[in-house]
Amino acid sequence: MDEKSRRVFSSKALNYFDELTKNMSYTKTAQLLGITQPALTQQIKKIERVVGAPLFYSVGKKIYLTDAGTSLLKATHQMFDLINNVTDHIQQASSEKSGTISIGLLSTAESIVIEDFIVEYNRINPNVVIDLNLLTRKELWDNIQNNQIDMAIMYLPDKNIKSWKIYKSKKIISDNIMLIHNNEKFSRKESVCYKDAISKPWATYLKTYYFSELLRERLRDALVDSPQVVARFSSPYQLLKFAQESEDVYTVLPLSFCIAHRSMFKLYQTPLEPAISSDLSFVYREDKEKIPRIEEFLSEWDNFLDKVSYIDRLKSSR
Image 1: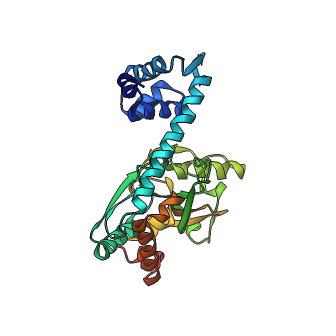
Image 2: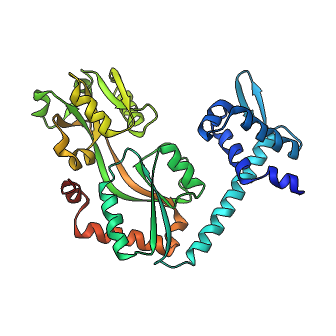
């Protein structure tokens, strides 16, 4: 391969191609990558000139992979896997007492116990640098697939994860969804049924967020209509503020957030029935456990919770 071809098949160009195959939309992919659509189109055309065949074809407004595109996508993933494996093997030979651990935390998850643990871990292993990144679900999965982070902290199950063959998870806590409301009658109940819960307008997470999709799925399965939504936010703090400063607007928040920030609440918190719960978990490629500093990190996490439970740490966090 000549120098020009090597430049075309750069990591950046292949990442652009890989991202386009996920979205099958030039406009959406360009927005996600933070580039212009013409710039993305130009990168794809450069690759097509080198391989000597089109990578995509269009039917109406939709695009699809050609046979050449399918072959290149398979080779791209094989190359990414090879690089990831080499990186992991190198890291496995490193010290448990030095290096960097990169963690992606779901931006809507309660972070206080994780933050407290990182402070404690730094006292034990001051030469290990912890990078904690707040990410969306899509960013989490893209980053863990591309080895940009060592582990993700996210809610499971997640239908975005298509295959668990090379991944493992470690449960942190089961987190229930709570209805946040001003109904005194509901507050005297052990739980609130879905039909009663949607009797007032809601403020919710953004449509693509984990709990929004989970709630839609559970309501649909129970043959209950979705609530009337009057506002959507990305942060639990924003949801609580809106509900508390509005008149007769409900919202839903994870129990972990309710416990950690109970002093902020002016509204009642009641579980839904049937209960809606998810497991907040560490998710990582299975070979990450062999990296000494990550093995040590997970071991220290267990020790941390053996001293004081996760729930008790939430209760004492504020």
